Image (tube, rainbow, N blue to C red; front, top):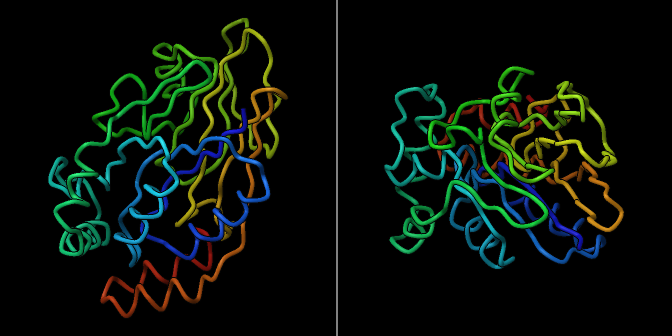
Length: 242
């Protein structure tokens, strides 16, 4: 089985299309979306339609929930709140229903998906250090868990002795008896100083996970953000990957 796993598209259709084009060369059997289809950029409707057309298993992100009033934006920064408010006005009743129905968790025999943390997924906390990774590992029932939310691709590893470590690697070789939390990075708004769209491939037969990047039309995405009246900062940050 070859899974295509991606996260944090954030309404950036140019980036999502580039990732899908890259996936066409990968022989993907099944697509998995780790949430935050919407928010920040200018094509929420189109991104929802595209994700649904992939027949992807999708979990809810905090922006997905906020856009349909399932999550307060009290703790969002001002720019994020403005983007959520704008996004809400763009969505049809059907699109809102789709976002409302997204589960917080998805699990099969190979992997688990959750946008944020496993122990309290509804709170949308961050797995951004060894301690928060350890908390999620205690709740992890499959060897591999894919997360998003930080927009920063990388892997937390719990080895057979119970030691937790973190690595920034493009290829992860899975070892028996270990657990892995893979941050799939962000399709539409990377924050690891690499502006290219980020996505993952999980090959279960080879027991390998690949974190990959795809160039896309950043200028086109920026023009749409500005034309929509969204905050300028949301356009500017795309070219810097932060």
